[in-house]
Length: 171
Image (tube, rainbow, N blue to C red):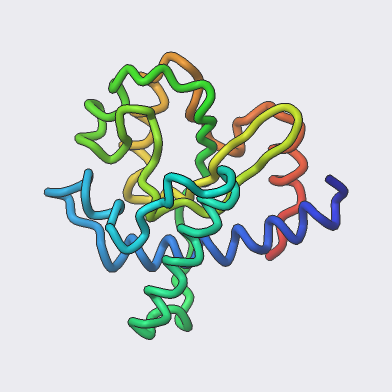
């Protein structure tokens, strides 16, 4: 993917990250981390054509829900980090789920309320999630307990696409 395409992808992820931040602000509940960011309104379609479509549908559903609440126009300040989740590398060991009291599921998957993009190229297929500042320490503990390297921070990912994506920031 050329630099212009990465710039466009980055801009789309930035918009989705703002929506994820707003969703988090409206729905986070310390007592129910398993449920609060996995609402039925955003439930991923299990028979979607592909992973990219699944993630796109969640992002669109969140955008629609926020527009319905008239919460889309005011953009919150982004304070957090971008997480990379590579589903093919998870070991379904439930370690991240236990470590985070259900914020991550048994497949190491971050909550779909925070999904902001999907990368599909020859080296990897990853879901990008925006992790609000308040959840960084909890997410770091999930990264540390997983064995399959399915979770990593974008700024620490060694994949060439991640470096190109991170380098193409649009402010």
